[in-house]
Length: 339
Ligand SMILES: [Zn+2]
Image (tube, rainbow, N blue to C red):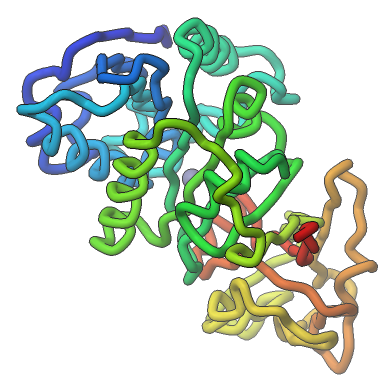
């Protein structure tokens, strides 16, 4: 039975744990760790919502080690998410919903996991959080960037402190940052591929910076310092269509460097894949309202699937499981902010 464990002290062994895969030695359930700091309203941080994405977990270890012998500049409330899937080193177990799609506002039917996340939000809301940071990794080649669900100045400012690249999105629903955005400025960090030193250092430094902030006073926001993109479609490969990066007989043969197009502003007719079987081969693009808009973005030309208009993709991955379980990529357009 899934239940939220709430603790107020760093458990023995947590900071020295060699790998998040061993986290069940410390926690047997999803856990909220509340620690007091100088400033009262806590920074809420969530890690391991996707159990194979360990950068946030390691960053928390680094951060808490730094403050082992001194007071935290601000209280923190840290949520360790999908404990059950950590051992397997996978995003989620087969019988689990995605832990970043079941937060309040989700369209997932009510279940243990939706109740768990509601419980977390209720607990954190009581403490009047200062800001919320959800730490993730992704699989393809992507720059580090922050995702926000509101274009208000404080949210943009929080994002600008992490990266010049900012992504605004309104779907999928049920993500942590969208639920928390109702309570305080909230961000999802995408720290590149799991376990890499650069991502860990960047996340740790960012968490420490936000911990030290007196306020998220957005008078410091300079919109020239950020590039903001909005996701306009999520692209999947329909189940009826086979795909591969190596097998030429698949309906779609993707290029093995597909992920190098992430965060590039691509021109019309940029090739996404070679097609074998023109009737079955297709990419499906869904807009924020789950409407099929594939024809708006893709067309077939000379046995290839190509873009029908200039777009910028994000999260293109070469991982066939991720493509089947989640999606091939998101398509984005630049948002012009007022100066
Ligand atoms: Zn993730």
